[in-house]
Length: 399
Image (cartoon, rainbow, N blue to C red):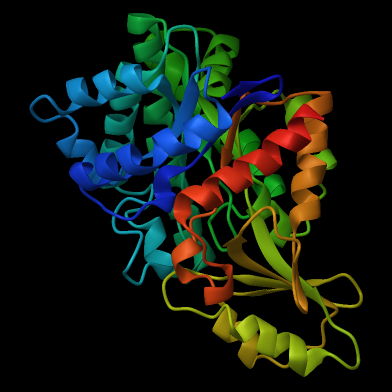
């Protein structure tokens, strides 16, 4: 739904299923109910997630025609997509394979370009469209600094090819679309600062050289193309895990002319340790230790230094003296306290407050995909959960 602060929706990676038939069935079962509660009289957008398999199948036969007809009948539209998970995302062990295939591969490039061709067929006139994607790769797949540098270079070159395709599509169709890169703990790009440094030091130089040589255009025009089509996915959960200063990151983006293509609104888990509660807090975190997704932990020492753990079991086994933990687990945005644990909901409130005062994107997407692996006490029907989250966000943005 369109609010003053932007187009608000939820990401359909919440729904299980990898085929197009399963994706479409989940949308038909859940989206009309959500829309009837939140936007009964006005169009409402969808944050569409398509697996690689579904992205191929939607282009077969009359699948796309049927989907566009359903969108029209439902008074719905697609303006943003999630292109981060390539394959299975529910009911299997995902862990670090959520990054596979990574941006060093032609498989990731082909999948993403296919998604953009699909989005170009769905995007309403006059609206920009974005697709979020992985932070280039997973850093623990590489053993040396040289291997990391080579992976960054290969990934950057493929990202430039996406910018070239999106520039061509804009010339052909008039549509503006952008690839929204999503920093995440243990990604090749983990933080807002790492994203900005990569953008300035690697993406822009490589992209400008590519476009000036291939298209014979001026460097400033090449830079404009890159900044239009390669943007940041501001995942509040991921940035909160890293204790990032939201206002400072957003100000630096504006200063350097780098665009945020989308805000993904989600919350992580956190807890403060005292002399008396360590074992109780660790036991509370153990309830969230499940085998499907990566639950990276970033601990803050009393002196402010950060310690990074690849997954929750690694953190639970450590005996480091720390003051606070923040753990990657997309918990419901409307819940602030989980007994001894809390959520990073205050980070969401901070980012939404910034967005209210000076909007830095038009795409807002709630992304709580872990309902199926939450402790039983937190599980409620999916549609009810989606509605409650969107109402919570809508209330804060409208106020």
